[in-house]
Length: 345
Image (tube, rainbow, N blue to C red; front, side, top):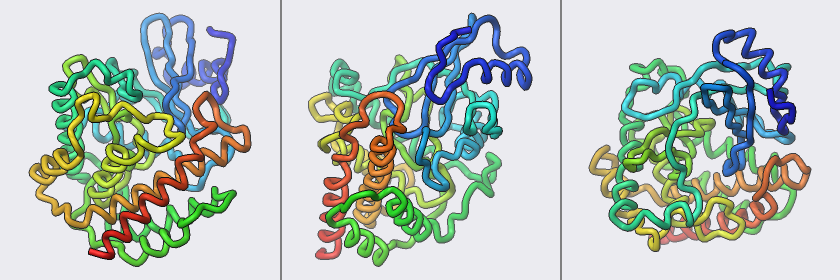
């Protein structure tokens, strides 16, 4: 067994736990490495002499209430197994914080590629980039078409009042992490709260759907959708608004640690093309989308501010955190501009 432990992962305690609850799972020595890219939950690649897995656990230090819920993430991935939405196979959930200091779960590592940076997508070309983009939005439409009751998720969330609760929740999250003045944040909060739209229908919502939260297979299909920590039952346009912000806005932000994979230079189509395809597959009216886009920008600002707060406390693990806080003010400004334009129309 690898003797060098990683932050948040004690291999000895983990091996003892696995041998106790899944005695036939690990064969031979167990080793681990931290997987970079994620700036929220900690993700590790594990392997023994024959198998490869991925372990997910919450971050160290300051963790916001209701965030980083490993039980929910495990539950939705397990429920979607066998559905039209590709997910990794899961092996176990541990809610006993005595093992690693926090709950965690173990899933299979899915072979494929994660497109996160400009250099990752530079060799795609327009034809492959467009096809990959359509497959990405098709999987989102497939997710939103899944009947929660049919996969055992009827009680996974409360669709009624989802948007109102989301607005209140992220307002509270911002106040819990805000350690500095953010221009326009209070005005954005007020305007978001005044214009909450009526949801068209409920669906399973991923909560952080974007290209680099998927694994892409060699044939450019979506091999697995990852990072389900914010999944619930709610308004499907919340996912669409967030995907639009990732696609059109966040790639140009200062401090963005995952900027660059999606770009016109790499051959990716404009988000409007994907919105047309999504609307055609789901039948949803996308006219209210500017509000969802503004809220998504606010949500990303809150997440970035939480990461910045943990960084200032010295509680982040890995690289790429030092400038994440630079994203917050531009995200707030862009979201506020979107709302002001919506109100003027």
